[in-house]
Amino acid sequence: MEKKDKTFYKLDKKYLSQILKRKKISRAKFAQMLSENGYEITLDGITYWYRSESNQPEDYKNIIIMAKVLEVPVNKLAPMNDNIKSFLQNEKQINFRYFPDIYASAGLRTSSQSEEVKTISVHENFLKEILNIPIKKSYDIIKINDDSMQPILSNGDFIILDRSKNSLETISNADIVIFRKNDDLFCKKVHNSEFEQCEILGTLVSKMAIETFKNFIEVVG
View 1 (cartoon, rainbow, N blue to C red):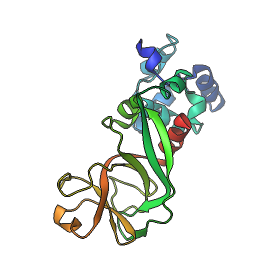
View 2: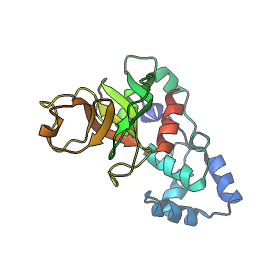
View 3: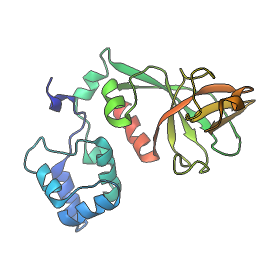
View 4: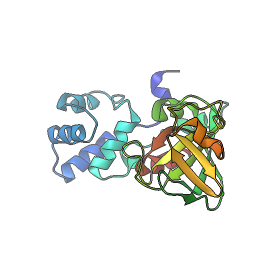
């Protein structure tokens, strides 16, 4: 399979040009705006996209930055290709458990609330290319409730935890651990000995900002 068949999105360059024209943003200015927001690119880099139909940003995280800078929907700027639907039907599908009403606190205690669970299915390429985490089938998604672990975690971040690492034998002092104490959930980086009276739910392996999570749901919904 060629690389282009594995790409699950396609930059809509016509739409991008329309937005830049409407907002009166030159390509040079757009390159500057992107660089200031974490996507290092030059005017030549943007011009390169228009030289071939297949040319576009290779990292989907940069598509998200572009959409945020332009204040446009990610799925309009770079619609998902139809082939992602077939990817989701094969044996390489990975399921996440998502708990929409559960929050873990990085500071003060937070009650776990309702434990309603939803299943989100993605192709394993999504884990490698977007989330940059190992291919496993033991991931859960919950939300963070405060800012006490900045810059690592921010209030409202969606975190991905590996529930296979749920014992003192499987975690290290370098891990950020999600654990339950009584009816409260916490997300902290602490020593193993502090978990002896707690239920360890898993360790943090990745995070997503709200904008990324919204698009993540659109991808697989």
